[in-house]
Picture 1 (tube, rainbow, N blue to C red):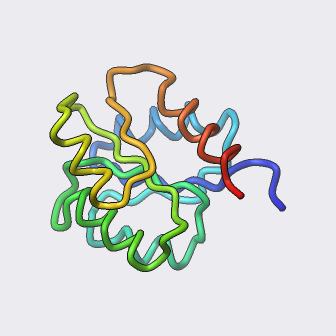
Picture 2 (picture 1 turned 90 degrees about the vertical axis):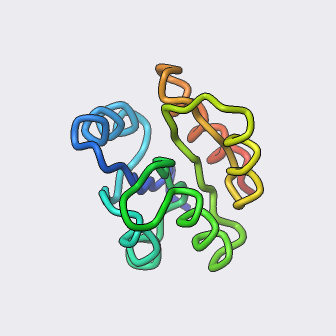
Picture 3 (picture 1 turned 90 degrees about the horizontal axis):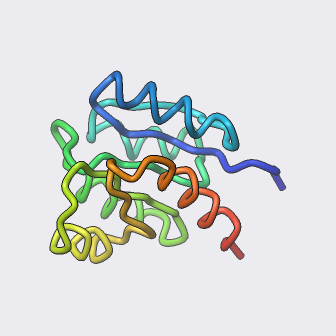
Length: 123
């Protein structure tokens, strides 16, 4: 069993994707980055990540729909919806779509700690 979680990042803003990759690379193996919601499902099937970080507002296929597709394909998938919208309604909709966690982009190291928690909680 790998000692570090394999993480896929789905983020359409290159600067944000680069920053997320840099932070997560400290304790995770970032296996790929996609910038379009329509590419997420294929990347999940090809790269087999343990955790998928999905921006809420992706082009072509929304982060919520990508989350729904991933968890329908693999109900055990750990999807983190990552958003600049700190909205309780959107948080609830993310969990309804199958997300394991919702992380507000303004929380600093909240994303890394959430990835580690989901990795530690797997059974």
